[in-house]
Image 1 (cartoon, rainbow, N blue to C red):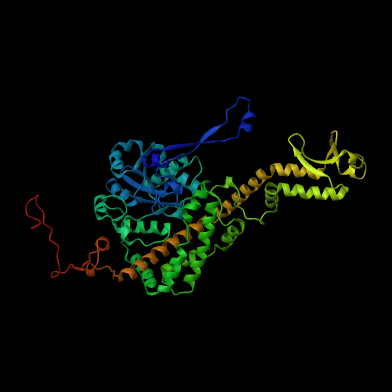
Image 2: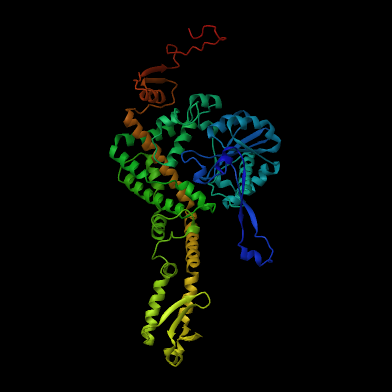
Length: 564
């Protein structure tokens, strides 16, 4: 499956929708019903085995309505959903910024976009114009988020509603009605981040080296995050540098606070190392593809969220970290429920059973005891009946014809067939040397033993569904906690980097002055260090004044002497 997806194929997953016994009810020659339950495409992956943990997997949709165009994108493995105005000239740079895996476009525009998709190694999905109808888009979005109006999410232009609606429609089609757990759409301002064209982005090697792969890129040189969510957030920030000095100052203040406090930074990073990828676990549970192990990931993640909130609460921290800490509290009840209900290391799939802890459900414990200790239960019943009848040779046996039965020698037949024992023991069979009986409790126990395994699994599946629903009811706060954990991880990673390499906090303001004193290029320095060579720091100064340093751009044909 992974090979097919990497080559851009879409794969239909068909499953058996009934068991053979159910099929026979419709006729002895009826074929077991099967149906397509999902279309797996490059932009709609949720399984860890198909995803890169430290990268987003974006599905995008682009719409152009009478000269007004917009791009919408979603990562269904984390629930993120965003949209922005995007004219055709900006489409390639924005797709490069996102590292999009799949682009949904109107069929009549697909021909012009195939070269772009091929160049970027991105799958192209063609949809009819009806999927891009803006009014239908409003209806789909309202249904998805359970609202009557989108006013609470902000104002969206017609092209933006078209792109969002087409994206949601494509998800509905590929997921066969099982919509992923998406966050409300966020309108992104194109001027909020630096605009970088695809060629410049590639040559700057921000997230990937020209040779291919992550090694040798700026991201690889500065990534000291310890969580998957933190790594994804860092990649987004490197791909989309902020142009808002207030936002930059807030992030720098968080890093500076952790640079100054080694103990706080160390405690935070130690706690973060135990945080699993709760965003993607939550997404799988919402799509009914999750299992007990995803619940355990949420248990661990929410537990660590509380620990991190306590660490931050005991310190004086800047606003960004303070806000993050606030999103980490309030999960104690759910975390305690998952801690109580789950074993320490649950299996991957609910159908495997054995993931619910002992002592939390009496019926489940009884079913397990019968399943696992059936012989011991029967042995105890045998001892009880031997004491009741006074027949020490009484045995409880089993065969495929009678099932479980009580057996005594023929010499005890008269005693067993006479009151008061005959009121408890019901005659089943007489042979030459033995007489066989049963009792109501033994018959009930036999049924319980035979069905115990199936019953135990049924109870565990019911408990799993109850826990899944309990998690989904807290999806919003869990998403907020995941974002907060990523924010803390990025800040702590940068602080660790600054301490390790003796970096200082830059002064960022609205002026046009650019001054670097003893600057160090992180990628070049890392490459030289691997080669055992020193890095020589460099100064750089540019300012708009008449006496300031200037850049001279020398142009001309090849071999014209520009280099000399």
